[in-house]
Amino acid sequence: MGTCGSSLTPDEKQALSKSRSIEEKNANDHARDEMTIKLLLLGAGESGKSTIFKQMKLLYGKGFSDDDRRDWIPKIHMNAISAMRDLCSAVTRLGLEQKVLDQTAFAHMLDITERTELTSEISGPIKSLWSDPGILEVWDRRSEFQVIESNELYFRKIEQISARGYLPTDEDILASRVRTCGIVEETYVIENVEFVIIDVGGQRNERKKWIHCFDNVNAVIFVAALSEYDQMMFEDETQNRMLDTLLLFESICNSRWFQKTAMILFLNKRDLFAKKIMKKALTEVSEWHDYNGKSCDYDEGVNFFLQKFLEKNQQKNKDIYTHVTCATDTENVKVVFNASKDIILKFNLEASGFM
Image (cartoon, rainbow, N blue to C red; front, side):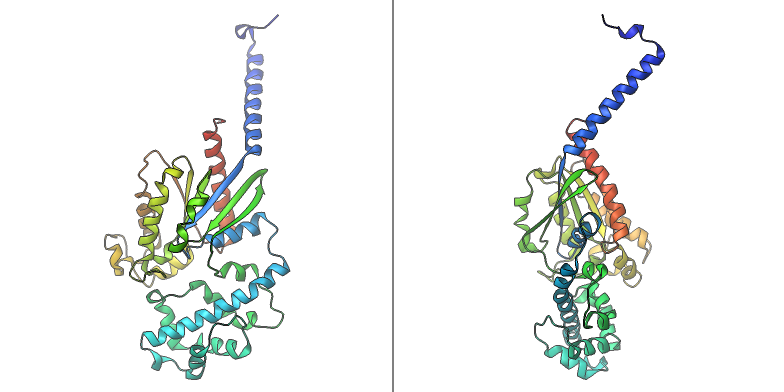
């Protein structure tokens, strides 16, 4: 003999409603626990997406073992050597040789060929040149040539990173630049959900490989470097990096592959952008002639580029979730990835009909 709904007491109705809510929550929790999220990190070369990828290992993996850290030593040494050699080459290119005080160290760095061992005969000249007015003037003009900005850390720490027994810190590893070739993948279990995180090379010649990763993607995090608004591409020094990134985002955002995929935009390198915009206003860069905000204003500059990206979205019913990030700041990445994770899970539960 059943009990019809109309004969239930108020307390029984409340209990039934609570029971249904619990059942629904349990079903959602089960669906969430059974879910595997395929997350694709996309962006142009040097945008910082591989740094985000390394942060995942620190935040959700086992971190870097001592063996891992030792493996990074030659890469870090090569970053420091190459960057200082690039600065010295730029001195010559810009005709500023006479402004360099330590001509011996300058000549020595120009003579160095490809090396990965940071010996005292190299670290000494690097230390001297990093305080040399000629080199510092060229560093301030670094948007005029190709150099990795994060290498400033290694110049400041040159004695430490060249010392016997040196073991790279998390900060050192995060600042290192090794060009991503092909496809790199790691799997992490985060709050009982399996995340397969995929990083792919961002240089133009690597982008043709992206299509192999597009199938069954649940979310895309597109990383764009705010600080590159006045820089030219490594592959084509006539093309502004930010313009290239905007075109790349437009193609990804509106791709048929990602019509039902959560799309998250990280406007990265906010720390470098904040420093640069105080010295070089957007109005000084011809590509941004339409900027009419305050000169050298960080917030208005960020909002200007945010709107540029959002305007590329041709699917008006598609939300773009945005964060302003610093990929080398572990706490910042933790906060924004947690927020992104919640968006991704909610988006995919709704797509599966559980919410």
